[in-house]
Image (tube, rainbow, N blue to C red; front, top):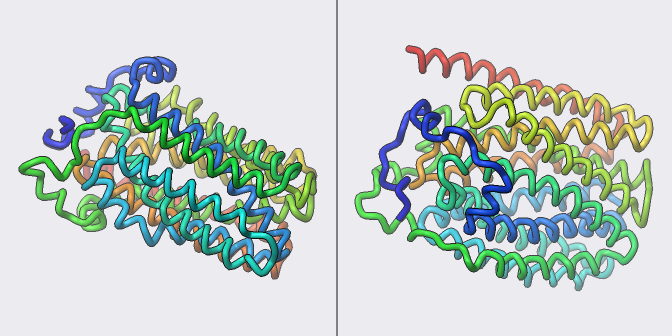
Amino acid sequence: MSKQEHAPKKSTEERQSEIGRPIGYFELIRYNSNFRCLWAGQVVSLLGDWFNLIASAILIAELTGSGLAMGILFTIRMVAPFVIAPIAGICADRYNRKHLLIITDVARAFIVFGFLFVQDESHVWLLYTLTTLLFAVSGFFSPARSAILPDITSARELGTANALGAATWSVMLAVGAMIGGLTTGLFGSQTAFIVDGLTFFISAACLLPIKLPGPPSAAPGTPARAKLSALRYMFQHPDILFIAMHKAAIALLLSSGFQIVQIEIANTHFIIGVGGAISLGFMYGVNGVGSGIGPILVRHWTGDQDRLLRISISIGYLIGAFGLVITAPLYDFTTVLIGGFVRSIGGGIVWVFSTQLLLQNAPNEIRGRIFGTEFALFTLMGGIATAVVGALLDQFHVHTILWGMVALPLIPVVLWSLWQIRYNRMKSG
């Protein structure tokens, strides 16, 4: 059992003094074999994820030609893990997190191969069903992976591991989306689905060497807070609640709806490849580069310091709004790529730094449930955003929708700033 599970919860100041100088990225990969295995599995798995996203999006656009149908697909991708997330969080706290990750990878591999049977418009129901199953199973993966990081890293390594994991997500978004777009555009969606299925098997193999302590529930005398539901704990600790809501805010106001808009732009405005698959791949690619670069650059200023991480979250939302301003006119494809790049820098900062704040402040015995609840809120808001934007695309021009999205990221800036004022007063009082 890890020491964190028995140690009393420490103040923010005590945790900051223990962290000291964060370890380097290459140093972490070289000397921490557990994280190296987790990271290798992430690299391979994410490559397949983006293949699947591009292939599914292009396939549904070709089969239906409907913005609403596209919105339903992305809504399913969000709602399915939302339903599973509360159970997934409990599992991440109760069972071996490594085993959960491996089981979900293998299950997803078999599900993905089912996409090969989607051949024409009459099979759209099968595409929706398989997507539901795939992302329901993925709902177990995300909380377990987030919760496992402090189990396999020290205090000095944790911030670096979180930033590197997020940067890897971004890099694989860039690489996977562009390669996935090229593969789908040149060879069709079936090839992309085959690659996706194989990557899950490889990812599971990468995770096998990880060595973990026993499940948190096995510890005698587990603190009473371990028996709390995540929501109850979060309402008792409102700072944790507000931090956990940032990903939901990103999904609702900055990210998920924009994904639908990107598909419309690729499919009707700047068409490169079959159904705009290559142009869509490039748009997702620059999103990945931006969301990876942003947190890494800003982290040189913030380190893992609590106060600076909180300030940077507000800055991230403002950068995201500026990216939407650049994109909205749709002057040309280059401008769209630049706008998406800037928007993703802001979103990446909010995502990575809110995760870091949770990792530094959430107790281990309930950490899986907190990340499960956070993921549930993220997927719920993402589902709402994709459904609304998908329906709006059938009624309004994409220009109108983009300009309407510009002001939305300012809402969490105001709310988060107000909470920080109150939080600082509570700390000083």
